[in-house]
Image (cartoon, rainbow, N blue to C red; front, top):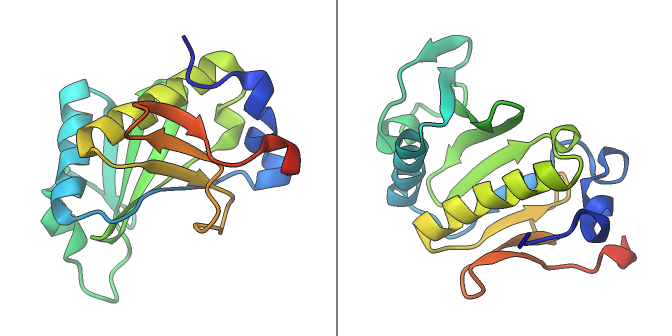
Length: 161
């Protein structure tokens, strides 16, 4: 059974209302959590590409990616859980796993199921919530992986948007 039904949440996936790149994050994270995400990507065999600026490089250990000089470009890791869904992890800080998804790639029940499965994999591995909020708004998550429920749940009323 699906975690969420498209008809119940499609307003949260409308790029015109939400911005095309909602804020995805795991709060209260650590370098070890970042490494667990990198290990998960490798274990699942998800296609990925690590880069620092324009340079594409082998995926380093998390502590290396997070220990760049203050004036260096933020490294990112592009991950494709499926060929047509991309998540871009940004190594801004070690205390929050931060990534983007493009809502234009997440239209319909099939893509929503892929997205929820991706959030479940990360949340289960870290045993932490994985939250999605409107672009530029970490404070008001709309949905996310709930550790206790072991599934992706609504955290806001879609009718209020």
